[in-house]
Length: 69
Image (tube, rainbow, N blue to C red; front, side, top):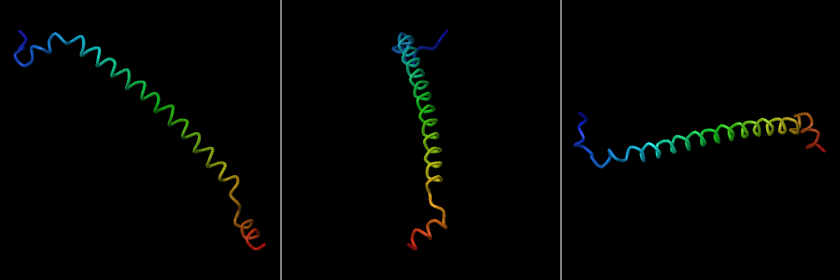
């Protein structure tokens, strides 16, 4: 027999607690998916910025000529 002395009021709430827990798990899965997608986008953006910076950063020789004029 199950010892129900510690919380009789909780035994009839099993379905509600189960539904609440399932909704929480679904929310966490959606949030995880969102974070993965966002991090992928931010990684791509960072790579593109790094490439752009590398392309348009003047070389040291070009900088010297520019500042000497």
